[in-house]
Length: 257
Image 1 (spheres, one colour):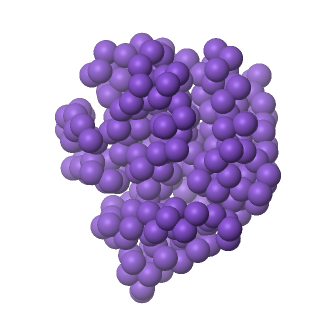
Image 2 (cartoon, helix red, strand yellow):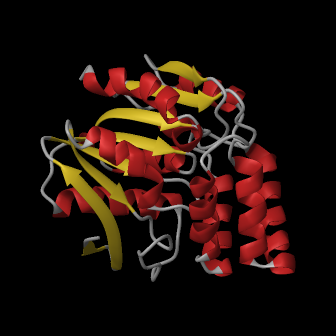
């Protein structure tokens, strides 16, 4: 897994394929591994980059985590690799990060997919971040990770997905996870999403209980010209839960550009 130094951080990323760049931005507590199936499917058509956000996976967190500085890291990665404008697929916390990326470096984003995400969670987001911090302090990262995976993934999914999700979250420091959760869940990117002018598709699992479909409906209403696809049977990490449904919703959009 290559490591690149940008913005004072050492950032790990996966890269596969060639041709047009496709940047993948993962969810809170995961890393580039979240996109293994997508990297396999898309690398014959795109130059796929899946970044470990700072504080996640093998990336450092020297300068702290915020959705905006992770967006700046994404732009810096594309710059350092001398890549042209990229297609971007972002899931969960990746949605606010992608909104900031289009604000910081609009020339870097060619086409956008936002999955299982939100523009704002209002007061509920702040309450959620506080609850996460309290749970982790009381129970520790391993117990939190196990409960999170059980509550997040579909009941009939691949057990390996749950194991990877638990290991990924449990490997993070409590400080790093709580800091990221506070930045993510209190993010308000309503105005940034209103300003997005690139072709955008919004997708969401029909059973997503963490960022329910109404939040994706709000995103689609904010971004001019965007559309919404619902992935039947998927919960919050639709690409893991229902990969075929996820690709049926996303691939035609990516390939149409």
